[in-house]
Length: 260
Image (cartoon, rainbow, N blue to C red):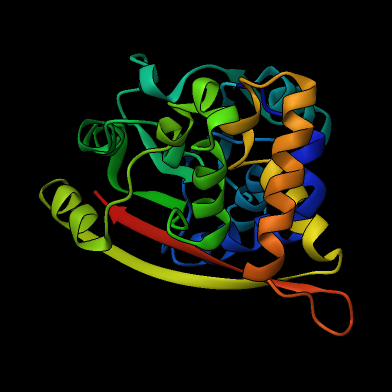
């Protein structure tokens, strides 16, 4: 699945608000080093740099298009291409990172039971792992994706699409996982109600930059258009358009700050 920085940033204001809320919960005076895992086009990295202006910051992402966009956006920062599943802190810096940020990315990475303890080990003493993940797999927008994918004309190509994201687990699961590795774990869930001025089409555009990607990637262009047309029609009842032409998109997100 390829990522499009342009598509993802169509709703940059709405997508960036959660990382501001996340980093405001990181209580640290003067971090030395910070990394943004899954930095995307650099919007989250920019918030990280604003929140902690004295830190040396590295951005990291598996998408070349995202890394190119981040480098254009923040030319003074370092951005590297790579895979979170195989990432480890550099061996020549045993002090680790003071902040590891993973904003809206770990839902695409499997095996959280081994991944998150590994990230905790890459922190300095007193360092913070700050994670935000969409927690919306049971929202109508995602239920309808799976429903469309199960229809006979799409099922052959989309039988594995729904499994592209990490299976949903709750706050208690993450607390129990991280507590043995942390001095403090803070977990909370927030539902944002995004006001999208473009009505139903705006919801389609939103998810084309994220959740719809694994459903569209296996299809040819004609099939993609058919899938999107059916998906749009199904969204109309689930997300009524208001009198001013806008639509409310409820979007639950799970937040974790774990301090080593």
